[in-house]
Image (cartoon, rainbow, N blue to C red; front, side, top):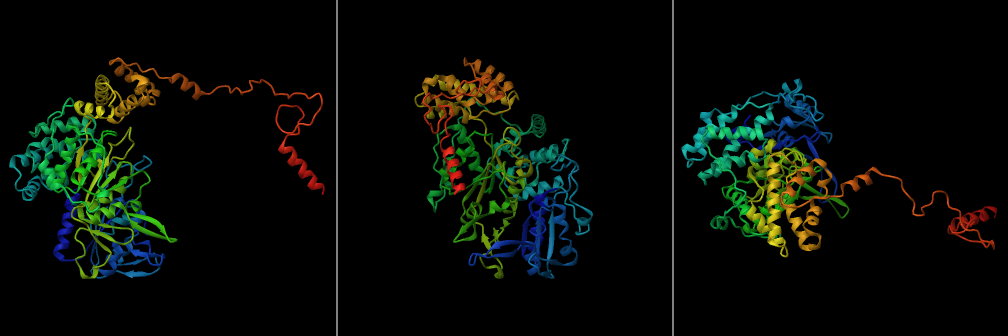
Length: 618
């Protein structure tokens, strides 16, 4: 299903009818009550009140509401809408009954049930279209655009795009659609949806010679399984698209200063502009140039993906510093919820109040929102941003609405509508899914919403320059050896020999240790970084082979650690094999406390017992 095509059709219909449109982005955490009303806090009194959701607001005042993501709701929550959908009234959580307005309309959008879907417990997932849900709506299937119509759309949207490039994209789209894979999820990751094609054409229109590299970034080719990557490359060849293999030996990229100058802003709050330690190098400059190019053509949402430790945060912070852009930063984690992403509860003067989260502040003031570790959060948490990015609408838990159009109608000229600043953008940082980062597959779920960019491992020349900046007292021969070792580790990871991608973060730690403690030697500096990895026997074998090729021996006290873990007989400090008998005082002098003399009174415990006995007698 072309989800972007569905949204475009709904917005076009509502524009023609001149009805007020509300978007309600659904997610898995919503229950039947949350679909109708939510609890909020009155800022004046501190009392909790009920607030209408976009669904109830549309039913009360008239207009159309788009329920985006019906397939994400639980079946019981979705079935609870039958009363308002079929009979036009609803029983609200505050105890009142609401009869829907005559002009109230509902349009639901959802993905069709996947034939190979699985539930959370590993079993076969049931379809969200239950018999109850099936009778609630009039169903319309939105098929993929035919190739001819898709070409017409791209030509109309991007008239300056060369016809030869459009032909190549159409051939590639057909080749990828014809690929046979095992699951619907894998098929979806290989498809060129309308959203992905728009991202590609927007950037290729500026740089036609970079078609192959832009396609690799859009499809995240470097992070696909080897067999999927091979399929995509064969489709490239059949479509007449060439890609240049990456040279990890050297990089001579320089940033476009004119483009950088044209995108530079005037910061209203300079304290929010990142100020990061950064060593200029061509490798990371190439990544910054790729991001800058997408930012300059109007991309409002970027997905910057790379293995842990390759410098994603450094690159983003340095580029924001060069652009003089204010940054709002949020680090996501496994306990992040939609509520915590949108609002920040605080206690002020004994009352619970909700303040704007970094996301809301960034949208209001036109700042760059940096979402770090986005793969760690549940996918539905990040997916709620789709409505904000694509449609320019997002309902907040306190009843307010972020809107790209602002307050158009006279009845909504109040604080409930928050206009989205035109300079607002979302830059999302994520690691690849699966081991060893144990993140969710964010790219497979919603990569088409973002303009995708890959942070590659560092080329050797850039790597040397960065290590030299951290090891001012380290000899160049040592830095060259570390760079060559880490290059072999990169190759071993790409071939599947080792699972963990050793990055520049670990090599910097080695150089910093050797710079501070040169007496430890190169072996001690390396052991300080990979000591934990050496506890795994299979990994130690491969690491020994790589390091020994460069004259470094990895001797790690693994045996002693294992012996301590297995346990043993605990020997007391007294080295006594039987209960100890104290010394005998020949004068039989009373001794209070201690364990030196036999027959002592026991110290404080004895005195306490004696006092208790005396009090008992009294």
